[in-house]
Image 1 (cartoon, rainbow, N blue to C red):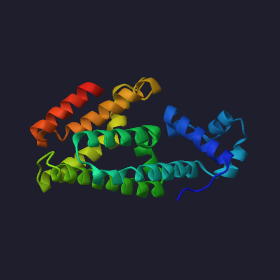
Image 2 (image 1 turned 60 degrees about the vertical axis):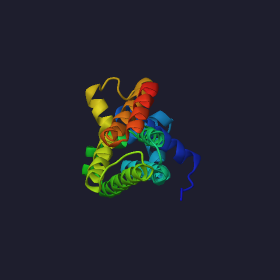
Image 3 (image 1 turned 45 degrees about the horizontal axis):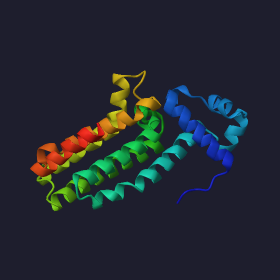
Length: 215
C-alpha cells in the first residue's frame, strides 16, 4: 500500500531521483538536493531525516512498481509477450537506474537496502522461471528443468547489470536521455536472445523479425 505523502515530500523524492540518476548517488549530497529545490537543508531533513531514508523510500517505490509487473510473467504465452514484459522491466529499471549503477556502493553501507535488493533479485529470478515454464507450456520453446534454471539465472544477471555494462562501455553517453530508448531495446533483445537456442523454429524466426523491427 502506497504511503500518502505531502507535495513537498514528493517533490524531494522526484528531485532526488533525477539527481541520483544523472550524477550517481554518491555524488549527490543532501545540500545539493535542497539547493535544486530552493529550500534549506533543514527543511529537507524535516521530511527525510537522512539520505539513507531518501534512498530507501525511493527503493520502496521501485519495489512496489516492479512488484505490479512481475506477476505478468505467469501469463506469458509467446515471444512477443516476453519482449513486451522485458521492455516494461527495463523501463522501470531505467527510471530508477541509480539503484543499479550504484548498487555495489549502496549495498556496502545499508543493510536494509541489502535485504530488499536480495529479495528483489530472487523475485525477478522466479519471474523468469515462470516465463520459461509458460513458453514451454504453450509450445514456444523446449527446455529441460536444469537448463531452465540456468537460463533464468542468466536472464536475471543480465537484466540486473545491463545498465552498468552500458555505463562502463560508454560513460559519457550511455545513460543520457537521448540514448535511453536504444539502451533499453538492446538490453531487452540480449536478455530475450538467451532463449534463442531453445525456441521452436517458428518462434526463433519471430524473435529475429521482432529484433529487426525494434533494433
